[in-house]
Amino acid sequence: MPHYNVLFLCTGNSSRSIMAEAIMNRKGGPIFTAYSSGSHPSGTVRPEALRQIESAGLSTEGLRSKSWEEFTRPESPHPSFVFTVCDTAAKEVCPIWPGQPMTAHWGVPDPAAIVGTPEEIERAFRDTFSILDRRISLFLSLPLSTLGQLAIQKEIDRIGHQ
Picture 1 (cartoon, one colour):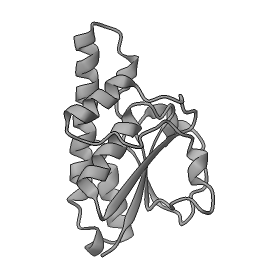
Picture 2 (spheres, helix red, strand yellow):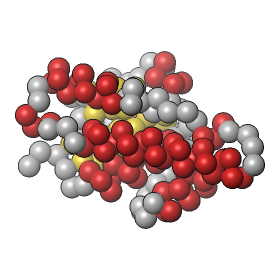
Picture 3 (cartoon, helix red, strand yellow):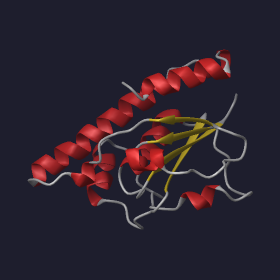
């Protein structure tokens, strides 16, 4: 059975990419192992993101804000897929990833940018989680072992527009 590493990128690695990592590790295991990182990590994970992950019954163990430089080292897990989940990271010059993984931009609005009542902020994190959960579920439904690279690339790009 094949094994794929998936890297979710965002600028701060504090919310969206962290939630995507937790979702993929739950839904994609053991075939997929997910990681997340940021171009300019905040150093902390937003408590609202952790609450959303926990409320979905997913583990928060080991989740932390980290730099994408951790994944450029020779001993690091080599990603098969790299997804940017925020617009800022999509416009940045990314490192050269070993093995030339497939990449796609799955931009999702930043729930941490919401200013409002606690209920409005919680709804923003819940909506973000829901979008990522749907896209990851669509990705996991792809018959990767039977699709060629071009077909897979087209599908992961299409999913980012869902």
